Every structure is written in C-alpha cells, then in structure tokens.
Length: 184
Image 1 (cartoon, rainbow, N blue to C red):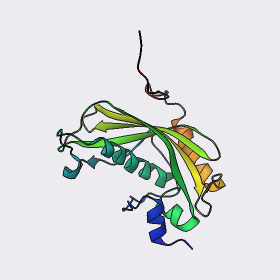
Image 2: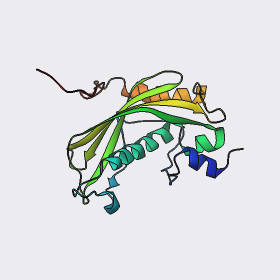
Image 3: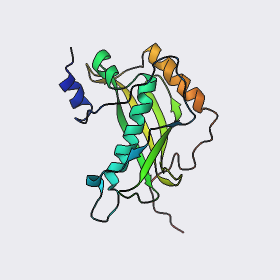
C-alpha cells in the first residue's frame, strides 16, 4: 500500500489541492482551458517579472486540472499506484508576466498511444495575449516498478475522448520546435 507521503514524494513533494471534476460523463472543451491563476509575489525575480521556473508551475497546474478529467490525477496515483512522469518539455517564453497579472493555460492533446501523451499548452493573460507555450511528452508509469506501462482501458477511454475533442484543432504554430541558432 502506498502512503500519502510516498505519493507526495513521487509527485515532487508539491502536493496541493486539485479541483475536483465530475468523472462521468466527460465533456471537454477544445482545447481544455484551466481555471484563472494568479502570479504570486515570491515568484517574481530580480528583473521584476515572473521567474522562468514558475511558467512551468502554471503549465503544470493546468495539466493537473486536465489530468483530473482524464482520471490520471493525484487520486489515481494514490489509489491505483499508476501515474504520469514528464519525459520532455519545451517552453517558449513569448511575453513577460508580472505580479498583478492573472492567467489561464490551455492544453491540447496532439498525439497519444498506449503509454504516452504529447500535448501543447498556451499560457495567456486574461486579456488574451500569449505569454508562453509548452510542449510536453508524458509517460504512463506503474509506480510499483517504477516502469512505463500501458494505460488501463478505462483511462484510455477518457484520454481518447479528450484527444477526439481536440482532433479538429489546427496544429499549433509553435509545436514541434527545436532549439537552434539560425545561420544565414
């Protein structure tokens, strides 16, 4: 049996309340959009804007909300000893955020298979302008190994429902980018 402390450790020690959503029937926006989030004073760096690490925190909070809808949130880890680990992330910083700003983040599933989900996120000021983007690849993990494992059928059904809702969305312009220096 996994204790709450071991789940918290597996989740990076950053356990916090996650909004609860109805498990069924699942309806999802295309793309999924998070609740409104505020910038905390201790997240502001010496340049007077949001420290780069906290853009990732905001993206992570959005994915937590979307993961709850797909049944892969903290209770999934605690009760079924299955979870998702991040394998890769690519963030593009577009515009500075400051202390008084409020934001939402969106999540669009781009691809998935029986063990992975690739998704794209946009972080936007509540006025609509783009602050940052994030492209992520997550792995489904059996925490008893730990080892990468297929999603259970009930979870795959929810992932496919969200992916299906997102299938008609255009591929985001910044998706699939690589870091490099352009040479003429």
